[in-house]
Image 1 (cartoon, helix red, strand yellow):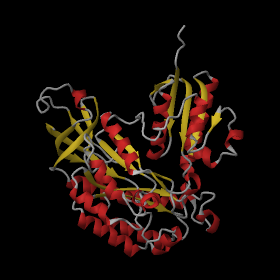
Image 2 (cartoon, rainbow, N blue to C red; image 1 turned 30 degrees about the horizontal axis):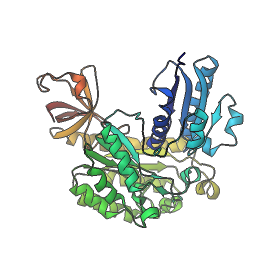
Image 3 (cartoon, rainbow, N blue to C red; image 1 turned 120 degrees about the horizontal axis):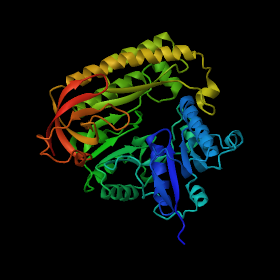
Length: 443
């Protein structure tokens, strides 16, 4: 008598780096389990929760997901609830006692013990195989683990350990396998992508890696996320300017502009250096779109320093900007050496003021694109509208380009068959976040 295969569902909290870890786990588990979608609501024999432990809000979200899962387990929706990732790594001693209903806890890199618990063999090609949880036409490629930086506010080195680069050949093999699955866009990620290669090769190798990845048949777009400003390698700008497969898009978290705050953050750059880097990027890569992140309420940020930040954001005109309020995290340099003197209410007020300013900048940028013709990739189709992105929008974090289906412009093809394909569109409208467009042709 044949036994029913058990079902396995995975929920990923936090960043795209966690998502890649989940996908490696699922690629092994598929040999023993039927994998359910992340948004599946019907329950499963086993639920995996990959947690985030970066800042307060992320920790609360992860704990909320675990508590909801154990309640559903009591109701019979889940057979087992298994937790791994950054939260359980950071609080490995406390969490099992706090939520005893969880069947097993594993750390951020406890992949082999986790697979053994699931009854799955871990083959030698674990770091290459992936079971995608993104749409099949794009994927994240994690090029290194951990971080050697010691920024005052960041617990990642404490959670994830030292920086470890993935060898170039292994990344090329992984990307080739993804391309064979239909992936056309790679989003290169790490805690600091520009640090890539220093530990393995004695030099920064991101530019060379981008060149190797661009040679893979089927890969048409490559974009870069999470680049640290200190020691930024100029040859990456050359590749971005000259290689048509490398998107003119750079995610470079700057965190602040005040010399005082940057010093207390231990960022190893000052305001003048930061301004010069931004100017160089815009000069060397005409039309580049810059995404950055800022922190408000860090120790040392008074009214003067916050005013400097507002002036800088107004001056620099970042096309994309996110921000969050400083969260004092145990084990970090900031928690051990500074007093968190800015109230939660004032942090939120500053955050709101900063994002209101950025909203105007984003709206101006989006409006400037009306009338332009751009190449887009189609992420989805629903209710007669294609949800698309150009090289200037990254999935999951940026706005979208909404394009109404036009049978005359698509040659009458079945609308859903265009998902994952490229189109040429003309931008016809804009708001603060999203754009609208009309189809010119399918590419």
